[in-house]
Amino acid sequence: MRVLSGIQPSGNLHLGNYFGMMKRMIEYQKNHELFCFIVNFHALTSVFDAARLRHQTCEAVGDFLALGLDPEKSVFWVQSDVPEVTELTWLLSNVTGMGLLERSHSYKDKLAKGIPASNGLFTYPVLMAADILGYGANLVPVGKDQKQHLEISRDIAARFNNTYGETFVIPEADIEDDLATIPGLDGQKMSKSYDNTIEIFIDETSLKQKIMTLKTDSTPVNEPKPIEGNILFSLYSLFLDERGKEELKDRFLTPGLKYGEVKKELFGVIWEHFAPYREKRAQINKDDVVEVMKKGAAKARAVISEYLDKARHNVGVDYYRKQN
Ligand code: ADP
Ligand code: TRP
Image (cartoon, rainbow, N blue to C red):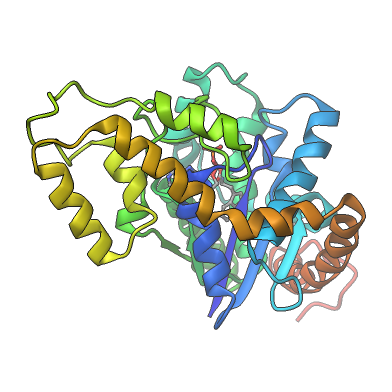
């Protein structure tokens, strides 16, 4: 089973990214064929500062490595090091209906957030389909916000196969209900573009400050606290096993719980959880990142080239070959 997913280097990686995608990817590498990449071509739709993009790309690679992604066991690369993906995007574009892209929630949300409407932003899902289909992925671990993008990829694969004959694997989204949408400090989806994130490799003082400003309701101390939609409960639960979650639930439902105290506790839990990774993170430098990415790109290119050759043949742009 081939598992694949990518992440945009459009800002510092945060707990939503970690629990929604990164942690699960790293677990998959134990017993699956893992393909993981940093999608800097996608980030071009919203980042217009070259120095920042370069920096964030290296940071994202470093974060993954520190968190345990093993480039020997998996295929790990930067999207732009494999230009074949843009050629495949064009081949897929011609079986992608306009309506499919026009219905994209993500496109509409991004416009609403002030990201400039561009051809890149509109065709973003086609590049993502090329990312997935070009590597023959079976399973794509993502958060719920990517569900529709996965449906678009499936649709494009099916259309291509129907038009030109069996070429691509139809991928499945892998979305875990509990981790589908991790809330940010303000209760909206935690996202690099909402300024509501808790970064994975944040410094101690900023982490404390962020947790203390986390939005809570005004239930009096001597009343039971709500669980549903409670950001503090949701974030704390991410770090607990089933039993721990039940205990936390009991504490919330028992009058007397003080949000301020739970916040301090949560700060400690997050800080401790990432302590070993922080140590590893501090040892990773840019030269290591570049070396690892070069090797990763070579492995990725070998795989996508096979799919691309097949697609080029099936659409008939390989005019120099004998007809079959
Ligand atoms: P962001 O919204 O911060 O820009 P990305 O779009 O780069 O995040 O998402 C990278 C991966 O992390 C995707 O698989 C996405 O679904 C997942 N992800 C991002 N934010 C969350 C969240 N708040 N909850 C669950 N998964 C998330
Ligand atoms: N669109 C995804 C996001 O914003 C990133 C992405 C690009 C991706 N290509 C992909 C995710 C391929 C999974 C598979 O999070």
